[in-house]
Length: 451
Image 1: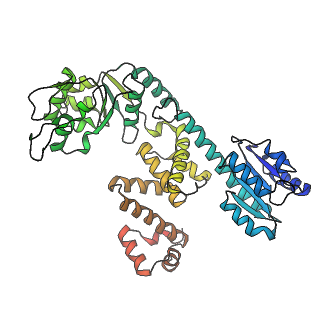
Image 2 (image 1 turned 30 degrees about the vertical axis):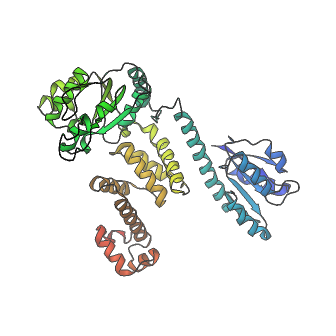
Image 3 (image 1 turned 120 degrees about the horizontal axis):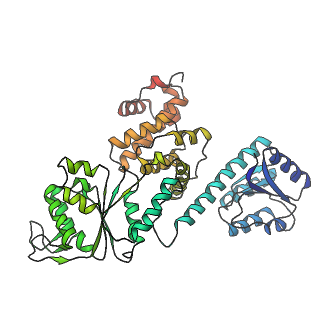
């Protein structure tokens, strides 16, 4: 099957052009060749879907001037320079100037193909990322990514429901994007110019959540030195999003019910109520109806919140979106960390597609970031290990660093087939430090021997 991404060859030497054309044609690449940079430049644009291979020393516009012109055209277009032995220092400088790579003449065919394949992977990722960003930048609305049938159906429902301006209950597993959906409902509604106020009911202690939602007057309780409006009041003429609504205390449920019924809110310590105009969107990862039937959640509040329900599909039911999302989040991570985006071998793609993604999109983002940071091949064991770590550890910076350190040690042990000496030498750490870290992370080196 012919690769769809074309290659532009530029060299004033006809023999080199023919040799490159033959090599790339045998590798199933489309290619076009030009004898001068000036001729090639007229056929290239910022949406050129392939890469460029150019000689450095050419009459007229040389390869470095050609590179500069292409950088102006598209700074992310991979340009591979072919250089003679005497041009190595100049070629190295060209990397700093934006060239993707350089290959010395006479080049080995396998080296050329390896660099071309990597450059093509990068170009495909860049273009996919651009297309995705373009599709997300529609009318300033927060992006809901995905073209799978479940997501298409969800987007259609959101577009209709946004105009209804009724209380809405969103159901979805952890990490499915409940807040993102709530923002979409707000941004596509007539309330889009008003505030969107999000509060995670499960993240606040019982002693704080009432003051957060309702506000308080000065002196209402200890440390209440001045009046403060609550989230309900702040969301006036906008939307309030109550995530993890199932976790609210029963005593607070009565007050929230009153707000929904009367559209009035009374601050703690106040003697009068304030009229508010809000849309309430609540979200839960549990079966709220079953909770209400068991007496664990107020039934009248459940029905007041549940004028309309939205069910978010888990990632495992969105197979068509997985790689699209993964590449996008890799590109975001590479940009944020200032690192190149690694290629995705077929076995890694298979692993990603077969994984159940219990943490949904949130887990996918974490894996994409780790993959960019560590450039390690993924397998099901590593994904399961990361998921267990995410479940049992808080995701602060020290714990994330520890996770990366553990994976690096395991990779070094695997490459050394369990040899302690080879492992601590490869990691550049003392033997005792390695033993301490093996004990810290509970790593058994025996499982890496004779893998």
